[in-house]
Amino acid sequence: MSDHSLPAPSAPAADFSVKPVLLGEKVLLRPFTEEDVPVMARILDDPEVGRLTGSPPGLFDTDRLRAWYGTRNDQKDRLDLGIVDRAGGGLVGEAVLNEWDPHNRNCMFRILIGPGGRGRGLGTEATRLIVGHAFEQLALHRVSLYVYAFNPRARRAYEKAGFVAEGVERQALWHEGEWIDAVRMSVLAPEWAAHRGRP
Ligand SMILES: CC(C)(COP(=O)(O)OP(=O)(O)OC[C@H]1O[C@@H](n2cnc3c(N)ncnc32)[C@H](O)[C@@H]1OP(=O)(O)O)[C@@H](O)C(=O)NCCC(=O)NCCS
Image (cartoon, rainbow, N blue to C red; front, side, top):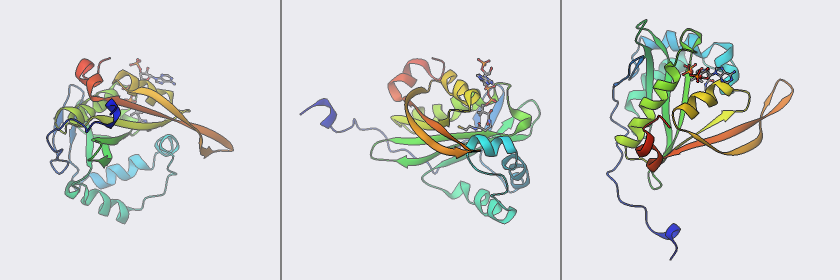
């Protein structure tokens, strides 16, 4: 029997139904409230957010967003948290752990921040906070993400928080007449234990 066929070491069951408040120096991550819907609507309508996340603006109408954000705290298999800029006090974006695979103890991570919050270290810190929660509270083994090749800022923020590029999905996005690669990145539990988001 090779090492790869051994059962995964046992770990406490992850509880995604708990919606924590995660406090950093620059940001606070917290569950969504009803009042967040118009703010998130504006952030999601930002053309740069649309371009870099691969979702065109205007995709989400207010009724859909109300239904979406109104049910995030009821989800038992994913974690959606709003990112609050502690300097200004306002909601600037969201950080999400989703596509949880309990058997293999992994999930995906995604993040988006609107124009008012970018380029000040908030994204890097929010990434460290929610990914830290994934490893330290949810006992996951692996957290992964996709980043498009035309988004070096996001890739840099992820690398600063410990993500390692592990492969390229070639020509995964058709964007303004061009095929764009998607880079797959991940962090593993032993890596996180060694650097805690500061590789
Ligand atoms: C991606 C995102 C979460 C990053 O958060 P942020 O708060 O803007 O990023 P930070 O300020 O923490 O870090 C950005 C880093 O990238 C660097 N950077 C900025 N522009 C860059 C560029 N064009 N090329 C390379 N590095 C760049 C910054 O200098 C900084 O690194 P440093 O601290 O070593 O100087 C945020 O910009 C965002 O949500 N953007 C829009 C949506 C998006 O791209 N989502 C991710 C989809 S995968």
